[in-house]
Amino acid sequence: MSRERHTPYLINSISELHRLLELPKPEQPLISVIDFSEIKCFSEESLRSVAYNFYCIALKKNFAGKMRYGQNYYDFDEGVMTFFSPGQVVTTEITEGLKLSGWWLVIHPDFIQGHSLATKIKLYGYFSYAVSEALHLSEKEEAMVETTMKNIRQEYQSITDHYSQDVILSHVELLLNYCNRFYNRQFITRKQANHTLLTRMETLTSAYFNDDQMQQTGLPTVKYIADKLNVSPNYLSDMLRSLTGQSAQQHIHNKLIEKAKEMLTTTSFSVSEVAYHLGFEHPQSFNKLFKNKTQLSPTAYKESLN
Image (cartoon, rainbow, N blue to C red):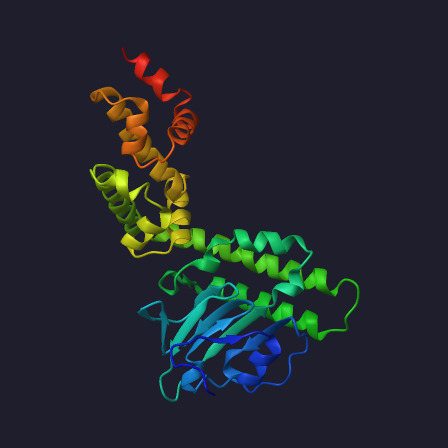
């Protein structure tokens, strides 16, 4: 193949994936449950970095290789799950003689088109978590995931009728809801580490809002904060919701309002000057956010303290 070494190989269809893995043609062209023990790992250099044009949900056991996401490598223990949306790039380093076990559910977006799951699946934030934020399962959780994946495979291997797609998608939705629950459990079990992350975020946002250059740099984004903390934006927001009930964006806005209140009460700046200092291009946007958070306009807040 004549692709650039660092150019991700786009796998457009589930049939193409089966062919590359030297598996029989899929029994259902838009959904497949693959047994890891039956596949051969990608050996060609051009296939080390791939992007799948479909959703991937993988339960990996005995994974002795390394997976790179972005510029970082991550080792995996037994019983971990990873999730990828269409178009995400995954680079894998395979160790020689590696034998995998586990299950890999692949779903083409066309299979869920027109179904409520087509919208709902985009709300599951873990599809854009980094590989380092993989879901680690207990034995009981692992068994539940494995059973659900096998039920999906059994259903599409059965005789197709008018109910087949709905039944399959109900199993898929059950699996995703299980994973939501398991991730919430993982946030709880890692509460101490997450509190440390929250403290680091508070320190980072405070320093940002105290920077005299903020007028030029603008408001901090969730991506900016997440990058500084070495986590993915969705993971950061979901972790914060589990601890505080608020997203990363809400935390940023809260810190901004704290700084705005400080400037309104301790400086002679006008409301417009405060807005520009805090990185707002238009004072109206600042006024709207401030009133939404405090139920008072910046002017009314300032006057209430006089």
